[in-house]
Length: 476
Image (spheres, rainbow, N blue to C red):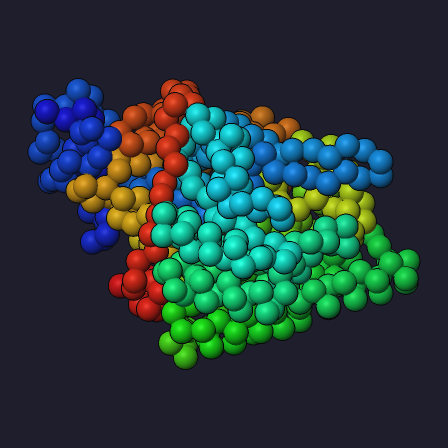
């Protein structure tokens, strides 16, 4: 007896796309069989004519995240996990990875406990944290870091820049990064890097402000492609000289970053690239549109040539995941900054991600369904230590299933979404939309109705596989 059977004629599995029945019991996929052959289910969903895929995984979100005060106003927190995870499930994403940001003076145990207060029992989908280090990291924290990697917190976020002049204290000096890499290597972790050259970035802030060109429309001059190239290459060379280190380059935005990752991979180093759907769909020219801040995140949007390089990187096994850098806030907060040094990063993007990327990858570019699923789900599961529990429709995996409906083409409108009072995707034409989302066997979204519960979300302890740290292709 199965709790649920999903019947589909286009089921995306690790072995390809085929017709199949998924038999779900106890929150996991208990059987996969010929289409129409599984009987004895508490409920059957007929997904023929649709696409059945593993639930989406977004490896880069920020919930209940600090937004600095501007012009004497008060600091804000972005939308909480409850809001963002609900939108994620409506959009077919069943797992998110956020950040537990360490503050100097506290232990990592205190950092994680503080983050748990914002997440535990307050998230509709499954979730995990990257450990985020910053500033000067004392030796006792490095010892504790090794223990946390061993205990299922294996991804470590590092900034090579303070991002803006007002955010001093994020950047980690290279000597400290060297020591962190030694711990990551010794304990089998993965470095997840925000890489921009701080000298270049801060120089450009000073230069543009002195020239009275501080309007946010000039952001791409500050967070520029040269900064990405210099920092990527410096971080990569450091990591290549610490045996056992593996890297995941977050929000790659420029052709120079794609090239640096490709060259390191060609040398056999275990490095992987992430980009964001806003980099793939918008360029720095969009800053000049009305409310152009809605398209911005850090690093900045780049040129059309950079955008083309990102798409080529996705095709060529250089960029492996498409994330969102999710920041859920109101339009008023998103556009409150008007300068290069006060514009809010991130955007409300977790809900339309799968639909937008399916449209661009499958409908527009003719890429195989398997490639789309890899880039929005499976690769993130593999690289972040969740596979095959997540990111795969296979016997024994969690029954996280998204049913995409190609018959539900639409124009994205904020009034139809579930997160904020704006969307940068307003007016985008998409050729499919999630019809049903299943989280560990529970139907949580169906026909625009929500059936989730805040008790549903579970924290996911993870281990980075040896093959990820040894640089086998995610396509193997």
